[in-house]
Length: 267
Length: 170
Image 1 (cartoon, helix red, strand yellow):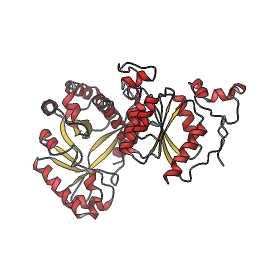
Image 2 (cartoon, each protein chain N blue to C red; image 1 turned 135 degrees about the vertical axis):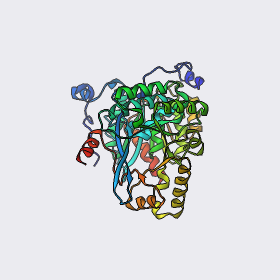
Image 3 (spheres, rainbow over the protein chains, first blue to last red; image 1 turned 180 degrees about the horizontal axis):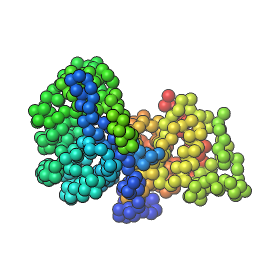
Image 4 (cartoon, rainbow over the protein chains, first blue to last red; image 1 turned 90 degrees about the horizontal axis):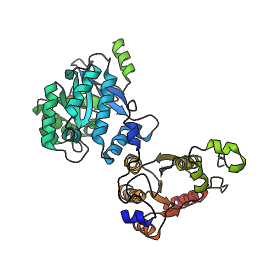
């Protein structure tokens, strides 16, 4: 490729570019926003109790990176997912500041925990700065990347648990969020992928898979949360599978910290 | 009727408004594209999605304005990885990319070309370059580019080419 560039009559002779990228701008303080999606526990009488909220990160408004899938895919291709994870954790915790006492679910990649050896100190510092106690936090671990360093990952998780932070496995049943991650993480919470929840009311195999995945998670003594519940019928299917903690557009869309505060105040 | 852009029919040097409407990098625009072209290019019958990839803001601005006014839904990206991420989550009918983007190899457009061919084989892709060489062009053709154009090139000419590809693909 260097030959190609030289053939074009210019170039860097293979030296890395030091030009500032869009990601550098996104990583600046204040560029990322956190929204909150409520997670509800359904009581036996069918009432909803707030179980916690998941912090969902959005990139700068009006840019291509506003959409989180694009933001994370872009950072992954830049090989800077660990940096983005830190910025997201910081943005989420800072937005949690001042909210009533809740369980906050905050996302991080397994690869970051396997790679970033000062992540625990960073997390501890950020929680203290935001005034959020560790027991109020559940780190939601997802994996969309190449295999992570399992030994380093487990070591980091032990240190995180020692702080008092809970561990959740995100998107269980899809992509890399598989049995290996479950075995490595031994989570307190397992969030089932929306891929299985979507259309579960119309598909017997989905319902069976949902019940099987829930049983697997419960075998780890983990609390099970079904994500992506978008209709009353899906909610009924999830409940029939024995899952009573749910999250999705049918129950609530993501809201800003101010809207969440308002919702809590009005109850 | 094709909507007229504010600068259509305006001679840049004679109208200071023309310059005030163009963002920084106007020099590139004025030498890179003939945005005063009056060639009539019909809009596509249904909105078509286009991704324009270039690290020059002025070129993105001009392409965005030009093709949006002709009925395209245009997304713009400045970096290879940004374009790849967009292509992963959106479908595009056409990609127009500069050969050389911010990066380390100077031919990121070729990498993008391979990516488009892999992830979205039906998407038409045009590469633009101010640094064309037979070797690079041969490589682009080998990787399946639909058109390899040297800059400067009038926008209307690019638009005609895009329309030709789209009609041929129907």
